[in-house]
Length: 210
Image 1 (cartoon, helix red, strand yellow):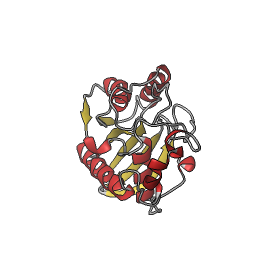
Image 2 (cartoon, one colour; image 1 turned 90 degrees about the horizontal axis):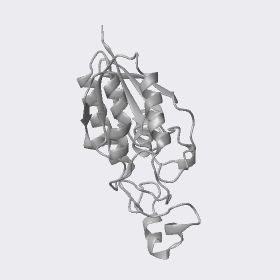
Image 3 (cartoon, rainbow, N blue to C red; image 1 turned 120 degrees about the vertical axis):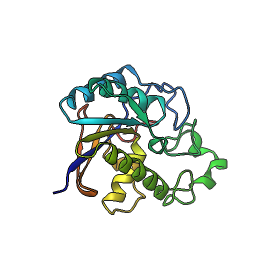
Image 4 (tube, rainbow, N blue to C red; image 1 turned 30 degrees about the vertical axis):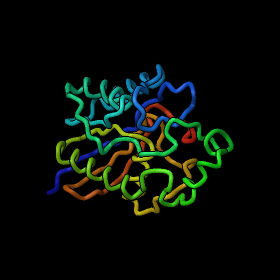
């Protein structure tokens, strides 16, 4: 009989971002006070889970979100670069519709193909690297549970890939709140179920840079 393994994809908590920029992979963006509370809330929510492996994106906000969960299970936080935020050419800009970078003609060529997308890392490449990280975590926690801390777009993209849905999408409709869990249930190597939960509550998917 196949063993059940669960790989939880946890989106990091709220980030201190007073200038409301798309911070992407920029260094130095830490959790806000609220984000730290969200991380603690998730740690409490999964305290009784059989988590034997914790891994995070190398970015500070992901590492800080992973820390209290790993500590509660007496584990170290591993790092996997494949869990990192999507590359984006608007990094460091204000990108709200009708505001900032999107109003500048020099940026318009980046918007020609929203189905790829043309402004950053292709969706299919995001999905493939995330799958590599997921299966590494599954093997590391075989028969138990793993927790991977990543970012909204990578988590949502790989979920759509696993659900056999088109990868381009309306960002306003993403089901991936701050500090939410997208849990992948495997029987052996086969994915049998995806479960979504929000231990820290619902947040707006349109929040810039979140």
